[in-house]
Amino acid sequence: MQVDFVRVYECAENPQNGKGCATVSEDAQFVAGTPAPEIIIPGPDYATGPLFTLFDDKPDKHLRSKEYDPQFKVYTETKEVEGRGNVLAIKKTGDVGNFYFESPEVNLDEWMQGGEIVFDLMVEDKAPDAKIMVKVDSGWPHASDIDVEVPPLGQWKQVRISFAELVENGNRFATDAKANVEAIRNVFVIEPTGPMVLNIDNIRYEK
Image 1 (cartoon, rainbow, N blue to C red):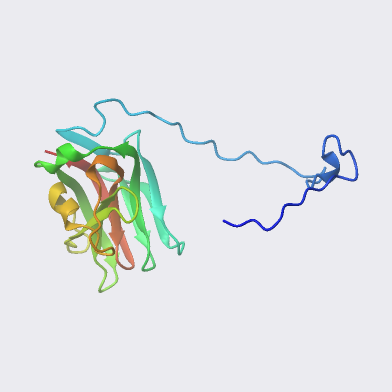
Image 2: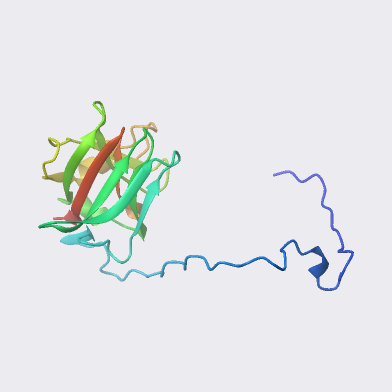
């Protein structure tokens, strides 16, 4: 960063308190914003085996549901499905963007030995060439991704992914980069490569 010059101005009115430089009208109405989410510090058993549940009717209390959505074309909601309870419904209408669970930075090295990412998947609709990637990452470009077979439309299918295989697969978009398992930030990322409507449920790490 380079700085050319700095200027300091004094208010013509009320220079002692700066009120003369106020830019908020006396008629302005203030609207309360959304409270910040509660920060929960994980305990020593967080994300350990043999079962680490990310979503079962609702996300684990440590996780934040988020979208990478630069085109404003990713829509996510929790909806109730008969016989399943709540599931995550994701609709993507563009070519860029994903849904992910953000976690406090966590060491997932123990899952490299026999660990799997498991979830139920149902695709309602999709563009002809759209595929599905699942990822984990520890901050770009330290990410790993793998393709998931798209089931027939309207049918639920259980997906099982070897965590070690996913990590070692590396980042297809950045040569020689892969997730650092000792500092994972996003523990589950699902990314359709094109327009798609899908539902996911019972998301977990399992041994």
